[in-house]
Image 1: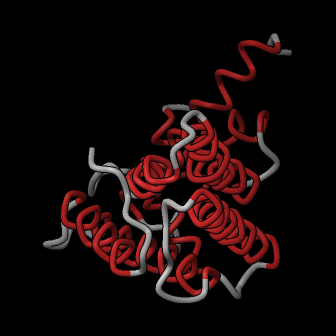
Image 2: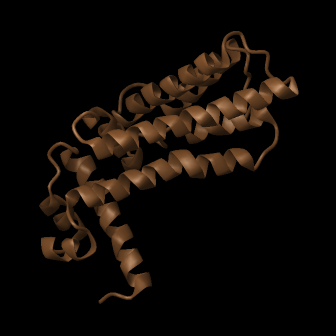
Amino acid sequence: MARPSTQKQRRIEVVDAALAAAAEHGLRNLSLTDVANQAGVTRGALLYYYEDLDAILVEAHAAGMHRVGADRAALVAAVQDPAEQLAIAIDAGLPSGPDDALMRLLYEFDVLAGKSPLHDELVQRLYREQLELYRGILAAGVASGAFALAGPLDDIAMNLVALEDAYGLHIVAGGSITVADAQRAIRLAATQAGATPAST
């Protein structure tokens, strides 16, 4: 049996292989064999670490949720100024570019929502985390006097999440919208709503 440290590393490698295979084949067409081929191992070797393909994808989805959720929240919490927090949240919520396999997988899970109760719950949990992050930043900005919101706080938070998701999808789809375009547009929307992000 693999040692705990080795087992953890192997599981990370399997998730990375799943991300690469999903980027190549698409989540709908992805098979355990695709992941095994990408990892350079047999299907049996994968099943030593994971029960099935769904278990691998759930862990990959969890890694994406951690990045957009807990990791981003930690970046925001590291600064005190709400304008700086808002700028960080906007930048960290977008893909790094068209080749961001982890974010691409998150968007593909969104498309598959409604076909798996587990995936539905993961998608909804991530949305709630996104929404709460923006709500918290906006509320702190209002309380400190940094923001004078032009509408209901909850509506502005929902709009920021919707813009983040929509622009992020365009970025990973490799369209004409760049990361810089998305950052600029979301910052403008926030500013128009009375919550001006800090310049970066």
